[in-house]
Each structure stands twice: as structure tokens, then as C-alpha cells.
Image 1: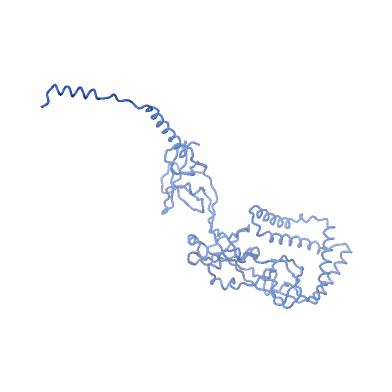
Image 2 (image 1 turned 30 degrees about the vertical axis):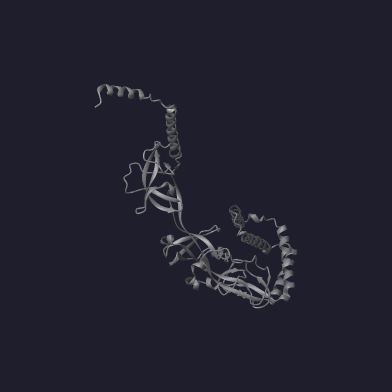
Length: 439
């Protein structure tokens, strides 16, 4: 039993043992630091997700729906061989169309080389004198000026893109244009008697040469190409169905460009018996056989008309899809065209875009669309009204690469739908309805 006195003594001793609680220094500074850090984090969050919101203006634009491809150009070609050793004198410019039974070239024996040299030398001298004494400015000819300007533009584009693959071809075209212009001036009637006399002498030499020549004529109307390229039997129209994906895959090492000599009419060159020195190309129809990724196959249907746009050639070729066939992890497509063939005769393996259609409408980057529904092809776009974010539902009409054409979704009852010149959010991530957007 513990007495009341003892309890009183124990209580007093316990009171004496209690020490006063000492507050740790720096508590207020720590609290202030936490408050400042919270303000800093809030400001950082606002800067990253609010002030960093990229906006732009809705506008209309054209979007081309195109499919990238790689393949080969196929033509009906007839190889022309030399019947004997000798000298070939072309009677048509490179790429010139000649009629059925028209003269492609004449072949003379090597003993006539001296006569040929005399003719070429005399012709050059007469042309030089005619051009020097002519008062006509060659650039007064609008047709010539337009053709030259087109080649200059191609050369400029090649320099800008640093793609010099077609510089030699441009040079050939310019040389041919200059030759054609000079020859046209040369063949004009002239009242200068001394020139008429020299022209008559030249014609007599040519007549003598023709008597020793073998004439090479065309079996059908077509385009003449001066080339020593061997025939590729697999690239014949009858063998299109046999071409594999490896045959159609683009490769610089493959004959990406047909060898075409810089030859104009009446510019002779030597040949040997059995050697190929030219081709006659049927320009009524040509084919482009290519492969595309399977994801684009549904866009291509046999019978539709599309546009063929070959890389580095500034032309659009209308063509028709003849067939679409699966070929493993690729799809094989055959297209045909009957125009602009003369502008593709120097090409074999190429890359090209198949332009299926084009659509005009409100054009936006795909990254500006959120909450996309691939079933009905709708998505959200955020427009800015009175400095606040407004989510609008839109219908995606077409999409190509990183852009899409959209319109207000028809099944959504929008009181104020999107319109041209609206400000919209380009990067809608972390942007919510009603959020303040500083502009």
C-alpha cells in the first residue's frame, strides 16, 4: 500500500524531471521556402502547358491524295541494228517522231568518211556565216524562247535541289534546240548569190553521198532514240505479268536512265555490223508497272484515271489503272498512258507519285486533332474564342502524310462550328475546355 504522502512526493519528483520543450530554429524559413517552391512550380507548369500553347489560323488549302511508288517504264521498242560496218548519218533528231516508212538514217561505208567530213565542214561554215549576217534575233521566236526557258527552269530546280542527274539531258535538249534553230535559218531562201552557190555545192555533195548509202526506214510511226542500250526482254509489254517486286524496286545501280547519245540529224557516227545504234519507240501507248505499300492498295482500283508524277520531271501524266494485284508485302500496280511519252523515253527505273485526287477545304496538321474516332473518322479540334479553349468536333474528309482536310461534323449540333480564320490550337495536348489561352 502506498500512502498519500508517498504519492505526493512521486508527483513532485516527476514534475521536476520535465524539461521545457525548445523550438528548433529555422522552422519559419523552411515554411517560406516551401511556399516559394510551390509558387515556382505553379509558374513553371503554367509556362510549359499554358504559355507554350501553339496557335495558328484556320485557312483553306489544297490537299493531294497521292501514293508513293517505284517501278519501271515499259514501251513497245524496236531495236535498229547496223547491217554492215560503216557510218550512220541520222535523219531525225533524238526523240523526233517520224511517220511510217519514214527515213530514220542512212548507212554508208567507211570509204565515204572524207565526203562526210567535207559536207559537215561546209554546212557548219555556211550556217556560221548565215547566223552572223542574220539580222533576226533568235529569241524573237516565242516558241524557241519558251522551250529554252523551260530547260533553264529545269536546270535551276536541279541546282536548288542539288540533284544533277538530269544536267546532261538538259544540255542535250538545249544543243538540239540551238541546232534546229540554226538549221531553220540555214534552210531559209536567201537572196545572197554567193550563199546560194555554196548551198548548191553542198546539196550536190549530199546527193553523191546518198547514192552510196543504204536507207534505214521505220516499220511504223514512232519516236527515234539514238541509243546503244541492249534490249531488256523482261521489260516488254507482253511480259508485264511476269515482273516481280525485285524487278520493280528502284535502285540507282539498275538502269535508272536509258543511255541516249547527244546526236542530232545529219551528225554522223561510226558503227559495226550487228551493233544497236537506235530504237524506234511506239508512242501510242506506254506503261508504268510499279509496287506500292499494301496500306495504299485500297485507294487504287482498276479502271480509275489518275495522274503519274515522276520524280524530278516537272510534268503530270494522265494515266489509267489497268490492274492492282497483291504481291506479298507489296501491291503490284499496272498503269497505262498515251500522252507525253516522248518526255519519258530516257527513263526506265523511276520513283513516282500516283496522284489519285485532290481536295480543297480547311487544311490542318494532323497533330492538331485529338480524341480521334477511326470508325466514323471524326476528331476534336480546339479553337480559341475570347481567349478561351473551345473543343469542336470535326469530320476528317481526307488525310495525306501530316495534313488533313476537315469540316464541322454533321451529326453534332454545334451552335458555333469551326470556320475559316478561326484561331486554333496546333498542339492540343494538356489543353482543356475553357482553359485561358494567351495570344
